[in-house]
Image (tube, rainbow, N blue to C red; front, side):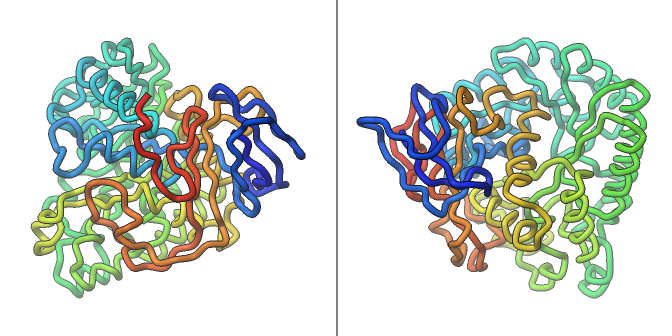
Length: 430
């Protein structure tokens, strides 16, 4: 495969020659007889995107998503690797379940699927799961999370942080004090007061983050904060990093763009955990991502069947699909505003998530000898985001009918196209 004229991470245009699953050469005026040629004039070449926070729902909740449909959605969004969250049925808290997920991802072929193991048995927060067995399994799990549930017991959290040190693992915390969010329906603030909906206070997130960075410092272990969403949380992470604590954090695309004002229409597509916050929080997390306080963007792709969203607000499930729209939203929120360049996008959506998750073969530079995991993106395009853009099983996107910039045209995984000129390639299993 010969890609010609692509702007490498937004810089100078160059050609990229791919052979045997690797980048053979990067330069100008390249040629190779018999190569499949892709004219990438005007396109930005990025390292294949890596999502550290994806809900693929399989096993157990295949009505929402499967590993096959979820990785097709990933490929459509430019992702070549996704980390699968453990809130499946059965919960991914044993070596057997994570190895099953790994095998299903390999069979699908659209993106690398790296399982995340649960911190506690059944995500119940009572006793540690088989962390060591999952780490030693064929899935080689290095990220553990009870996402959807906070590891609220400080002793359990401390023990988990201590345990993963032995194999270089990381605990990814869903920061939500359950006692402070009982019955909560949206962000606590002016809008919740006007609508009469129970508020979800920022301190419920911030207090857990504050506790956990101190625990991580105490035991000398790695902590990752999932879907950070408030200005106060940014301040705590900034303080912790200045103190030298080994903490990383992620922000979702929707928390970079959307606010709690959208809840006024009671459209459950906007119901998510953590909730959409105030405009002040959106600006703060953008600044935190721009200055490096927040390390990565992660989608928190959370598919649900229609009946779980087309109902009254209080009964609706939390969550949004986000794989297909993520790069376009980051383009609007961070690139068009001048806060990030395309090289920064490569860092926060590929290099850093692969590093945090200890995932080899992804997030590597676009250079000779590196694995051919690439995304070709048209930054000049602009169009309404519609259901035809969604390639997974569920359609609970908050961006439907919203104008978004850009378009992912090619996704190259293991040296072969899984998305070609905007269309998914069928039969890629290998």
